[in-house]
Length: 242
Image: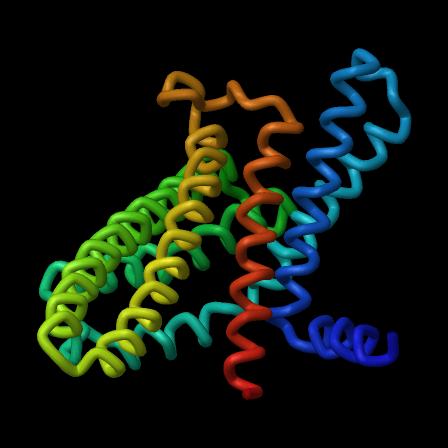
């Protein structure tokens, strides 16, 4: 019990961990609130309260992202043009992802400031631009993960053939590690696709299925993506501590 409590405290004390928890609660509240409101015909007070709670948590995350520009810039600078990346396709995919992510923050700041009436511009076009950049990043991230999966499968087949000829122990160890990496990339694909479905929903009406998702479906996609993120973060922390 004490160990579990300590793990939760450590999770909430880090910015990354707290954001994951808030994101999960945000979409989880939207999922439950949306289901309750739909079943009772928008007359459920608890359902409305959960949707309002979700909106407040979303606003909280937007405000906290006001301070993410420098960390994103530092990451983009460290990666640069991906000179250490051997695969040119992966290299330029990563550069494009970093470019979209870097532009996302100032656009979101402008949209937030406009909604808060700190500046006199219309926020709608800036929110649309934010969503488009986020969607581009998710799409490229999905394609990047799919390419990595293909490369890992080819590598696994190579080591399986090597194991049949000789060096069986080494082949087994490497193959197991490759399968673990493939599973990680599959989770990345599933998470990105769930978020991408929401990104399309938040685009202007007329674009694919924009505006057609009910609250509970947006919450479901976001909760699914958030839980994958929580799982990946916990797995990463455990591997670091071992």
